[in-house]
Amino acid sequence: MRLSPDALIYLQWGFVKLNATIVFTWALMLVLTVGSKLITRKLSTGLERSRWQNFLELIVTTIQKQIEEMGLSHPERYLGFLGTLFLFVATASVFTIIPGYEPPTSSLSTTTALALCVFVAAPLFGIKEQGVGGYLRTYIEPTFVMLPFNIIGELSRTLALAVRLFGNMMSGAMIVSILLTIMPFVLPAVMTVLGLLTGMVQAYIFSILAAVYIAAATRARKPRPKPEQKADATAAPAT
Amino acid sequence: MDTMTVIAVASICIAGITTGFGTMGPALAEGRAVATALTSLAQQPDASSTITRTLFVGLAMIESTAIYCFVVSMILIFANPFWNYAIAQTAGK
Image (tube, rainbow over all chains, first blue to last red; front, side, top):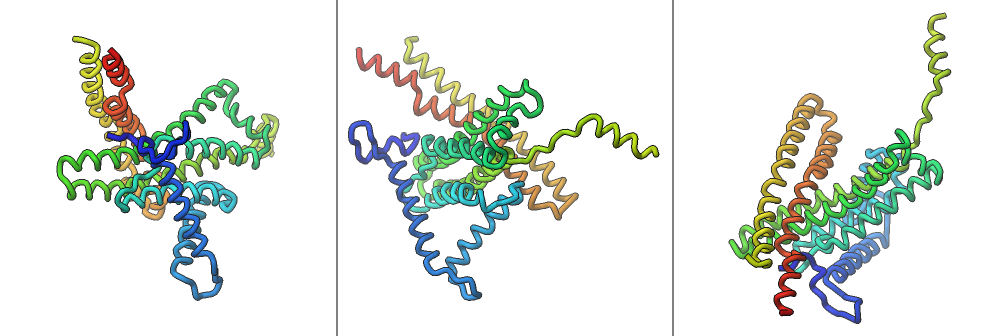
């Protein structure tokens, strides 16, 4: 029984393997880019709009509003990264309808790559907002003793992102393949529908968590008030 | 009992116990989370979108611990390195 599409190898030259994960990822990239290019060829700003343009506008404005609600004040800067994460994981899960398709996110390699993108992106956005010194100072935020815990926290939440997505996708595929031996057609069909639901929820969770990490890295830190100012504030109302 | 039997028995028993015990904690925690979310929804229905979104994010974080247990069970059953090593040893002999 295969644990991930990594084991299904189509071609091999030396140590370079062309496995099912890579082929399905390329197919997803092709569908997403060619589809978007076809829809955005003739954009109209008037009242007459094509159905597909409405659909894309719905997706883009919804993602933008969600990013803004997470606390990021200029959502258009992060829309490219976070929107792509959501769309890639969502379409990877939705295409399980097609027979013979295995989601590339059910392989630990793909999910680790996506989690590493978030791991690199959060400090990048933080440095762009606050500068290198300002961002590095957030690691010693409450006290200096918290430095190792903050670093370990960064690494563990990246690992959690990868394993959460991998576990959810892999368990869906594996349960369907195990149930095929018990009751063909009815039970696997129901479990595949449940897999679609969890796939969409996991896509949403992945991008929302990425937005939360970026928001935590780019938050403007308020300087703590000095003690003399506090004493003035308490002495002044007496007069 | 020789090495192969010991490895097989240990893997099978622990795989079952891991998923059995590992999913109890997250299930209880998710039940409490949903109950509290429903109470606060009943008290403030106009904050429902924020409450629902926070509920789903919290449920995903709680669910991940159950997923970790499931992944360990799957590794023990399907991609067990000790079993593969023992098989390679007996095949080499």
